[in-house]
Image 1: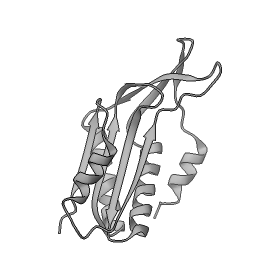
Image 2 (image 1 turned 30 degrees about the vertical axis):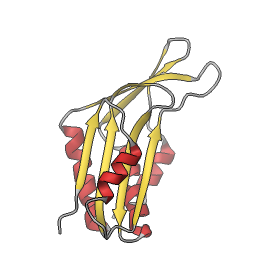
Image 3 (image 1 turned 120 degrees about the vertical axis):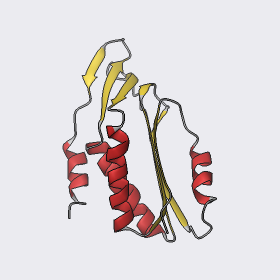
Length: 156
């Protein structure tokens, strides 16, 4: 059986419940769906984020995400995967990313979702710049060592 996979890069918001419903209606053998949703945070004080702009390399982003989804499907017994990543300007509280991993049992779904999020956080071809509350651009978001360390645990 081919595992149903949905990968979308879009500027529009998404409905998490609708995406889970779409994934589960295709297969009644799914016993677990693990979801991760990333949301734009704001904060308080002078360093608060007023907005974030996400850019990507069209075509390459979808292909790279697809490559990692394919790897997840070979590593775990998955019954469906959805990855949605937004681009453009988002403000605090807006959805940015959604990863859904479906399986007969929760362990595979949890591990696959973590694997995919660690990849998206560290290696997916997206670039983020932050805008502060005072209107200044805080620059590009740099990679974090703790994210790289989390992703390293999946190396074969």
